[in-house]
Image 1 (cartoon, rainbow, N blue to C red):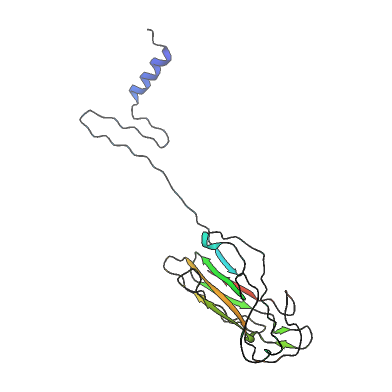
Image 2: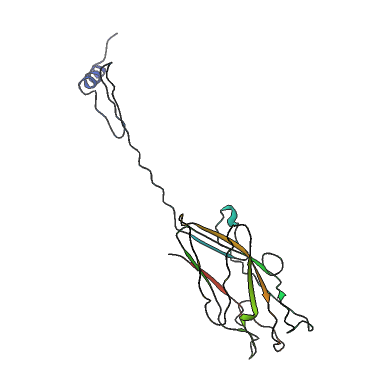
Length: 212
């Protein structure tokens, strides 16, 4: 069988340069009694985004890693009877994503300590000259799914509450939740009327979480 000129040229090139290599593959040859070695390299990189998730009320399923926005704003309401007004007995709210005026609260983050607070624009008003202080609304945090209970800011009139600092562990990852139960202290007797409302009469509270 005749060997082509091209085939002969290729065989000659291989004989002259047996250690020729391209890109990230290498070839080492040697005598049968030697121990040749070869190396190759691969670079790996993973970029993790910084994220901060805050939920108060209706929201995504953070316990399964669903950190998504949800535009639902819950309303907590009270309507004490005539006999109850001002009797000093706290009244549980109605509404919330959990029964009895209770909201799911959660923070998940991955970049160190987180600061949590709450801001109001003023006392609850009936749209006239009558007011009910946010001091009449209490928030009690209790265990939900995490080992550490997420504390709730104390609501204040027309200001931002004192900051709650949630300290991150060495891993820098925070995952804390709670059930926040809202109650009306009912220690005063206000004039008849409807105070606050759906983003009206100072009824909306803004919860804010920040991290470095």
